[in-house]
Image (cartoon, rainbow over all chains, first blue to last red; front, top):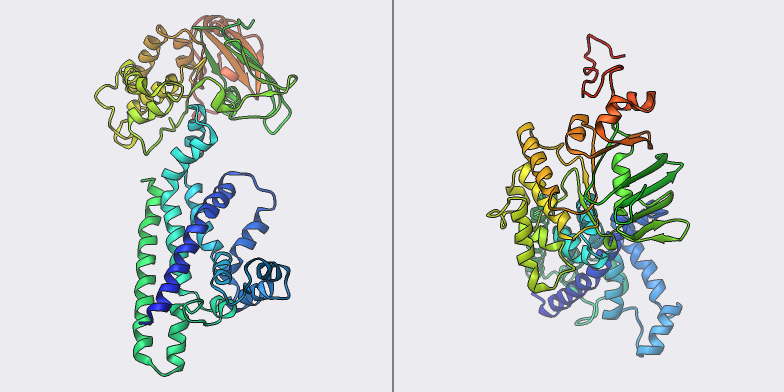
Length: 221
Length: 260
């Protein structure tokens, strides 16, 4: 096992899940409860990373992060190193690639909260922030946890975007998925096998957890 | 005419549900809003609670103005002192009976919360069931929690949206007796929405007949049943012509006997 690569993967996945938690709660709740103009377009844009070939997404992100872009230039001016092929660039790409994995389950979770219960909360004197804290979050939590688990697992397994934006710099942007590919290229099938088995078990555990939680969304545990 | 401490409602709306509503309910009075399904009864209650916010008009209760399009006033639901019992009860499923009531006591200091919540549950005769979640309560018990929660806010008006629709006949009778008993201890206007004329006539001081979003007539039950103001009232309440003072109505049309 390439422990350095594993550490990069876990760090990337944990940060992506944590940073997307407030984003998913905010956007998911907004889409679930508000009448949103242009909803199909917004939802299509957010779902795009699900169907886009990772290389296409990676290409556009690379262009957006590169030295020729304003973002890339601004980043270099402030931090002294380019955004592309850095851990920060990889994290930013990972956040964008994982938007649907975080937002969609959270949105479903909020949609499962019955309208009359939210209205009853308002009529019981709950200001909006208290409706979020005492009603929405406790009733939508299976969707919220599902979003975080899926984001974590998907980040650990992401390959195309990571390769395009991050390259394969040990300790910086080489994740387990990339290390596995490198091992196979080097005909080190034993090391590749360990990593493949690890990714397989992690994905299986994440999905099992997700399915367990999704049965709870309907039951309003 | 609206009394200063009571509830007064004037609503006008062109669509999607046309509304032409004028009603008043004095303190300690129980007003039953009656009319056929789709007449807009629940919409009126939702407007009072601030959950339906469109159209023009004015809603005032206990000397406070909650909605006034002319004055640009539209108080959000959580700042209107309204007790609303939903048709579905809409209890918080993740909280106990006690938790449901305590949740609506946000205006009280922490030290008084539990005592007040227990008192309210005693008032609706639910002592002993404080720690049950709604899923472990019967329909009638859930309804009582909903009533206790609605009263917890110390509301200026109590709104009941078809509160007896989801329980069996016996429970309904018991709950109706309960409401009659509860009324004696309340000094606030109570508005009951129902499509059951017998229930309305049995419980209410006054009826207000609503049809297609329009208030047609208001008055004591016996007066309305004896002398409907117009043909629309008669139709809305499905009253038989010439019947005096009783509750006799046309029998429900059956498949082999078409209705009038």
